[in-house]
Image (cartoon, rainbow, N blue to C red; front, side, top):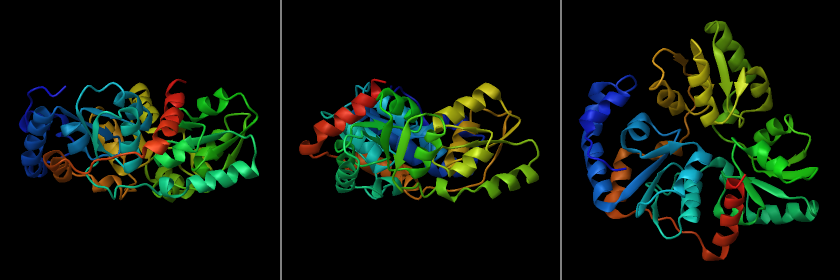
Amino acid sequence: MNEQISAASLYDRVARVIPKAEWMGFQDDVEAILELKRKRNAVILAHNYQTPEIFHGVADIVGDSLALARKAMEVEADVIVLAGVHFMAETAKLLNPEKTVLIPDMAAGCSLADSITPEDIALLRKAYPGVPVVTYVNTSAAVKAASDICCTSGNARQVVESLGVPRVLMLPDEYLAKNVAKETNVELIAWRGHCEVHELFTADDIRELRESHPGVIVLAHPECPPEVVDAADFSGSTAVMSDYVGRERPARVVLLTECSMSDNVAVHHPDVEFIRPCNLCPHMKRITLGNIRTALEENRHEVTVDPAIAGAARRAVERMLQI
């Protein structure tokens, strides 16, 4: 996986989205990271919201939360560096307990993960006895451990319907739950957590985009408010949106999700015009080439999961992956 490549040869991948002068500033870190990966038998897992110099430059495995969860189980490296947010690193550790998992910045959090606690779930179970708890992977390991099964935005409907029950607690993303509820006959009881990136998009944004960019195809992430999803042409996870662009090849498209997603997809589709209404995730942007390099050089920051919750959290994730 860590074959002999150089920063100079990698530039061809990103030349359409990163100016040459900017890449020259990245080159020392890229070269150092490539060497450190070989030396430490390490791999870098990068979420779709990482910037192109990470996503297309130094990452070995890329994708959405579901893809990273699945692929984390297949890696043979000794060290995993998670270029994403903390809950993703915890998930990688749950699935690879014997490996060293590093996150370059411990402050790379998530508004959804912060919106709910295990104590909240305990209260919900009392209020809704016998109703199973489906928890979005955008949560802490402790919350996963208090749940019955996890889901991602890409498989939420399948997970909900797999339980074979008429009513489900779906936590913590209120908008994801409401958007999934439109696609299933299962009654979904939602929490009031929101993604601080996706909740900023509005139906008025879409109207203005259509007026200023005639013919644009609008793709919305299901963490967006329901009225945004209703006004879009298509809704899906980051992986599904990327697949849509590759399959349909729209002349002009807008992805209503985190900024870097458009840059990363655009690398593969030079014939598609990407309109970029930019909402940045401040947590994802805490991950940089510099702190990835430091993570590998100094073995920081190592992610651990309390053994008292690891087993139950792992079962919730593995149960999802079996669907």
